[in-house]
Image (tube, rainbow, N blue to C red; front, side):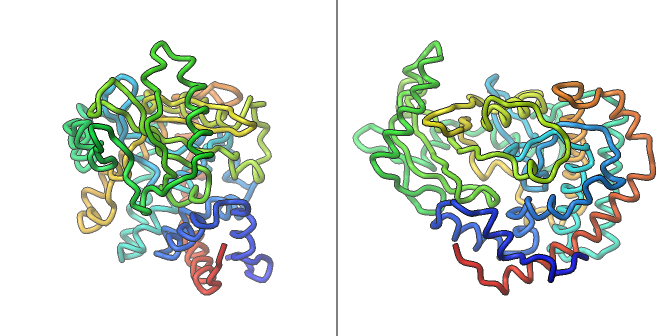
Length: 401
């Protein structure tokens, strides 16, 4: 455990979130108070500040990682080919690092979730080891696969089937309303909030940058813009929901998600040299494209007025596994963990040998090494206690933006 007198949790969190929208930062701090797992989601920077850089767990192949890997950062989406996939889905913190970094954050999230599910320590350890074994097995095989409707099992298959069957009109009706035959985004102050005319004009101009590069620029004609509330760690960053023309009728409109990209929180803690990216959005876009077999539809980096944004088709929050539903079904939880662990290995293999990462053969070799596996399980189980202690201190601090 880290000596608390050497650091002030509230100050570290406040410093990291400096400059964010205070209204949304209030929501972030409220979300982080729900439980230790939610706190963990919102404090990726603390995890890597505490990571033993240069220690034995860093003696691992360099790989492209998403950087903030935990149970809630997997979900379903439609690709440009309109097929439905389940995969890693948050790459804001993506970076080149020892492959163990993503594995450790993922395993720690399992210990925390199991604790919040009131599982025994024995069950939590068994689940974490099962997930690690699944990652190691997938890495050792060295082949990259995807999870889509035809190959999914259990709760993941149920999720993908529901998304595959969902009609565009049904989804649009949950997020928009018709007014004289024209759709407008709903304002509910839970997922969306109103923005001023200047912001609407800025976003509209920004989308025109993408539209002018496409064969059908009218597809991207902006119909409405709102602020967007989503996630935990990124709350407070500039983010918008955008309604566009799409395929030409109110029932064939599209929804987009536009999110500012300020840079990876891991950059301050790594000793690994990174590529010289054109922009932070280009970093995120390139790493995501390299790590995923198929990426979400309309994924595009945009530079506008010296700011960096990533654009993609809006994927609803409902397109994630509801962990509360499966906590009573440990068999379903095991299958889910197996899929997530496999996807982690496949993503690292998919991006191997690119821009400084080690080749797949090195990752395969690493999977056969035993010592690091016991070390990483012990580290994550112990660090779970650190997160719980930090969470209690945070709640007592009553931190305000």
